[in-house]
Length: 373
Image 1 (tube, rainbow, N blue to C red):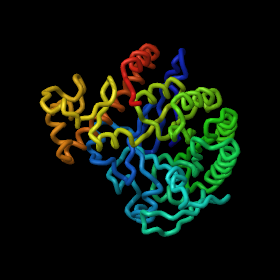
Image 2: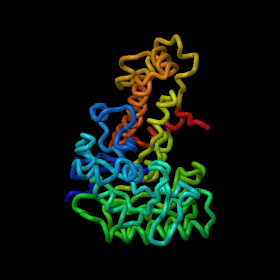
Image 3: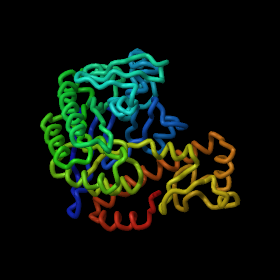
Image 4: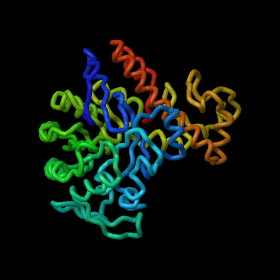
């Protein structure tokens, strides 16, 4: 019973739903946004900051931690939870996206991927499904991802099928070689680029593996928003109803709302922390750049009515100063605000679904929020 999903509310006017996914380190209320801690830290924040934001689960990056400091070292120190001092759920990716983004520095073979990484001085490595399961077992996250091939968004149909079928074989091997299914929930990853029939075929194959959850990969990798939403709509009827559905690498506010409308339960993205490091913040109307001179003399909070630490204690003028001077505090305050914005958005979404008013809420939010072009 370590990994069970309880579906609580199904919104009648769309595929939106709420639920609870139970893990050894606590329950996760869905729909949920998961902050990304690539190298075992959400940049600029402490675990206490994340607890105060009420982040229910965070991510870490298998590829980076495998290379530095090494998954075996982390295991020797008690696993990610103890090493990071984080006692809530953790998800680790498989490293597939990072490996396949290496371009000419990687070679795809049927049993795995050989690659050369700049992170550790150009040493050669070979990742297979079995090796990835060993690495993720050493890291000790609650949710682990199967090794997959994330084909580029502009892949032709022939390559898209080849990559999808390879991903299917690797997912089967990951299930076979998973170290301890009682301690870690393995999610397979649906692929197929933007080809509807391939996506449906992949969804059916992954659902038949009967694992605790299912993920959708290979979206938000260069295709249009329209294509992403179209694929989600095509996939929804073929996704398991009684398991959490995770859309990987998606985190802009409009995509969270649109994803929930199309039946997605879990999201992650580096966007809120990355934007903070460039001086940008989420507001209900869209993104703003605090480097803009119009904020120099403003006594207003970043967002009126926002309850995050940043907005409750500092004015736009001060934030503008911190960002212009490249002070670390500015990066931290904007990170706190951006994560609060997305986490609060998900809390609002859960409330509106339960109340039966999500369609009205989504229409109002999407009508007000203007995404970056």
